Image 1 (tube, rainbow, N blue to C red):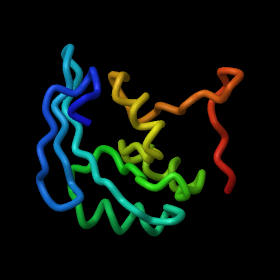
Image 2: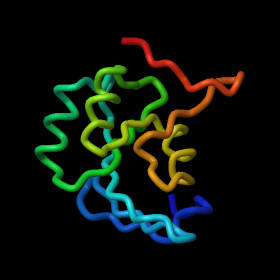
Image 3: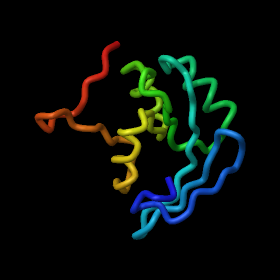
Length: 113
């Protein structure tokens, strides 16, 4: 994260929890890194209860993902759910919660239910 052009500082708060300070007037982000095979709504509920003030849940493994319902549930609560490459794009956004990585034809990526 420290190498990303929009990240000024990356501070580890807890084992999987980080506080990112972003550049260019963008707000800081409280980010949780997880290794859950498929993040579902129940996972989001549990993580939000365990980590108050969370703004992003980032799934680390390339083989893992999330359900559409989980992404929408989190988004309604002001939290983004991302796989890593989506999160790297979301860091550029003023409000990363709503960021969706476009596909090869510049359409938002669709996540299977």
